[in-house]
Amino acid sequence: LSPIRHHNFCAGPAALPTAVLERARDELLDYHGLGLSVMEMSHRAAEYVAIAEKAESDLRELLAIPANYKVLFTQGGATQQFAAVPFNLLGAGGRANFVTTGIWSNKALAEADHLFGDSRVAASSEANGHVAVPRPRDIVLSDDAAYLHYTANETIGGLEFDYIPDARRPDGSDVPLVCDLSSSILSGPLDVSKFGVIYAGAQKNIGPAGLVVVIVRDDLLDRARDDMPSLFSYQALSDAGSMINTPATYSWYLAGLVFEWLKDDIGGLGAMDIINQRKADKLYAAIDASDFYSNPIAPLNRSRMNVPFVLADSRLDKRFLAESEAAGLLNLKGHRSVGGMRASLYNAVPEAAVNALVDFMADFEQRNG
Ligand code: PLP
Image 1 (tube, helix red, strand yellow):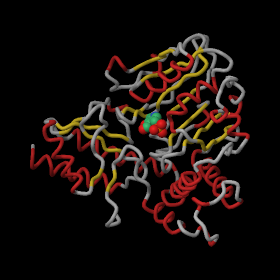
Image 2 (cartoon, rainbow, N blue to C red):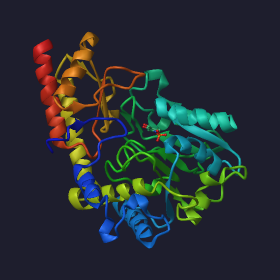
Image 3 (tube, rainbow, N blue to C red):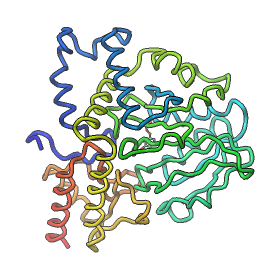
């Protein structure tokens, strides 16, 4: 740990790897002897196009993205994709189907509903209070389903799918599976071929805010509605190499540095997966070993990236947060809608941070339990 950098458990914008920030600092004023910053380059300059293309090819390599998928680097946050997905996939009619498992999947449904109405809940964990995701047999699509959308990891609830759902109508025909992977992309290997569309806001495991990565199977590019804003169009973005207009150039560059860090420093997503599992196991074990702390999520669906927990006595919350911050453990306050604590353990959060948190929790319990 650098003496000036504390352990940051923020849910997003989240910690970035120190090595990435150091490299960005070194390249900040004068990128490779060009006498200017990446931030000040034209997005059409050969040097910038090389940066952008390298980022895409490293992401393709990390996730083993098949050749028949387009990778788009766009903007507007994951929230814009709540609208862009139905615009891009409902052109041939049919209904958007959703698995709802918490706040983010419900927001995605609400936006599709607001735009085009008639969205269907194919399955929901609402009845169990979003502590366990629906099992595969409980997901029932409408006969006229155009696609099935789900949120792989609910960042606020701390609920993560333990499987990739089947997107099949009752008659057995396949529809595209659409996944909001904002808070778990790149946390481990993924079989991209199971998906029609994947999207992820960058500000957790990819890079800084302002960038969204969309991975779309190329046969889906002709399903768009005609009344779509052109900046939302996957076809138009793909045709223009994600440069219909000025892209988020610096965020894209930093994302590229994160991809290089994952490949070269970590050793790829298989290695990242093992580290993430160890980090999450350690924190959940500490929570489970004590009556002082608790997490409500079914063990099979506990998020590896976002670990919400509460203190048995919520009157101690303020003290816990003040003392943890003083100990260099930042951003442990739970989401304003649920309260309590939340530790986000994204890729850039090192194991040492989890060790420090677990030690702090044990010490705090000792003094206050
Ligand atoms: N989806 C998930 C799973 C999220 O965690 C978030 C933000 O935290 C969003 C969507 C919204 O992302 P944005 O703020 O980039 O629109």
